Amino acid sequence: MSFSTAADLRAADDGSDDDGPFTDLQHPERSFSRAGEMSYEGATVIELRPTAGPTDEAALAALAREVLADGPYRFGDWFDLPLPVFLVHDGRTGDTFRLAVREAVIELHVRSATDAAGLRAFRDRLAASTPAGTDWRVSRRTD
Image 1 (spheres, rainbow, N blue to C red):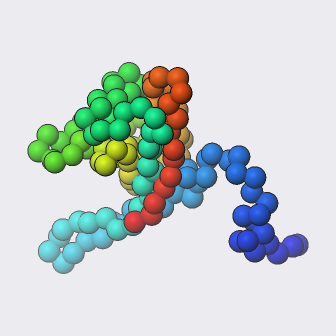
Image 2: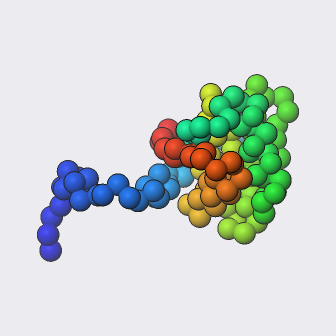
């Protein structure tokens, strides 16, 4: 048995693994107040940012809606919010996630019923639906 430090693992990583943001997803935990209110704490958000192509919210929201309409998705949006937000279910992978468009980024919010396969599939469908030369930078944050 050998021991590896985080620095050793980073040094061994050649940077070719583009699945990094999709690994070890943190799912939100439900909590209930004494008044019966439910809230969620903690989650992973995958951020998809175009390196070229549409950068305004309206264009990104239209692109996201187009991908959702073409794919194996059931989705709904909230009309009274100040930004585009969709609850999405991928019929092929069985994953459910929330999609929001804000500040030139498409955000995929991990929910209780989200696995990496559904997020990767959306990223792949998004990339396939944009013009050649449009790359998507994928990053993640944990709230």
